[in-house]
Length: 164
Image (cartoon, rainbow, N blue to C red; front, side):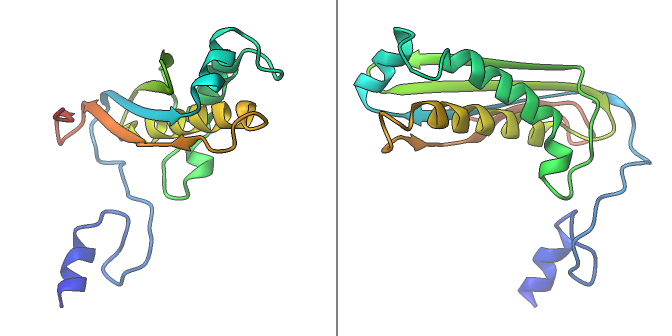
């Protein structure tokens, strides 16, 4: 019985437990914004190579920013039940935190009927994966995470911000 009750609360599951895309046609069009973050932890020597611009594949942070932006635009194709959204703005900030961490902050903005949390999370994740891809030849032990929503604004549920 508890299982049926929890399913009823999930917007992407119908009464019979089947996956469905949520109908947002009745929702108001509002400005919606989300910020997500991701971290990449690596050897100090790897971060030094990135900072010095000496990674063989090129400018790691520039490529990761582009990957994040591209991924945000493709979220509806990557995540099966996400609505494809016209994004008004995507921003990726990547900050080196010596000796071993890189912090990624991804912001997505739209004017629409559904939120952009998934776009921000996808952008942060793709940027982190790109950093791993560009540096794996020198550091296969890198770790990704946490990847998390930091804040969202707009929509019927209002604003939300992670408590630090």
